[in-house]
Amino acid sequence: MKRLKETQGWLIGKSEVRVVDVKFQEKLKLIPRVLFIIPMFVTIGLIIYTFMKYDQMPEMIPTHWGPTGEADAFSEKTYFSVVALPLILLVMQGMFLMMSEGMKFSGARLNPANKKASLVQQLAFRKYTSLLALFITIGITLMMGYFHLQTIHPEISSSLIMWALPLTFLILTFAVVGIYAIKVGQSGSRLKVEENSPAIENKIAVDEDRYWKGGMFYMNKNDPSIMVEKRFGVGWTLNFAHPISWIVLLVPLLLIFGISFLL
Image 1 (cartoon, rainbow, N blue to C red):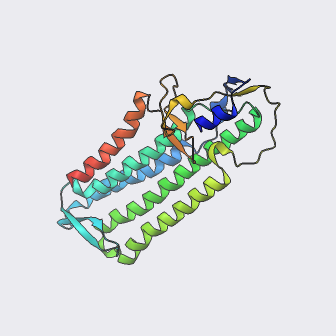
Image 2 (tube, rainbow, N blue to C red; image 1 turned 45 degrees about the vertical axis):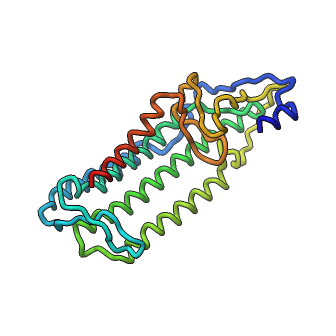
């Protein structure tokens, strides 16, 4: 792509500009934070309920289920092992909450060629991304919540449900993500809007090739954004030059791997 830009002279005779809407955050209509927090309270309630039922639980706790839906790995019952799955769920819910909240503080890259349309698309893109995060949060809460409850109440356990639930979740998630990618597109580029504004003559958006290492990893220490839109595909990535990005990335992973390792 760099070679193509040089060969065809994409930047010749044009000035790079960055278009900013200072009220962008005020115009955002993301899914309310409370809708992400409710599943987290459900998980906390599940942890409390588990401790209440601790004495009634079996001495060996299932920690893994095979392709047939039957448990094939177990851990000895301890106060930690009985809540390991809800703890992992709580970390995952927190990750999706941070993803939705992080979009509020991520700079919008507006297109100088059509500022108004670009703004509408950006706002819609973030709204739909927040909605997608909520959908996945609810899905994993229902799935992992059932997995955990059947360790407390074996009578509700069903190998058919244990097999079908993750498969259904995956199919629905891939379907929703596919619709999202096709209908919305990166930065809302596939959304049709009627807003138009005169293009800034001989001006183009700032070229950020130098900040994309290998074309995939964004590293710009002068950009305060922790989350940035992916350059290819659909979705978000981190600004790896921002120290907080490493905390956002590593802390949840270390928690999940740590909980799994201690089982």
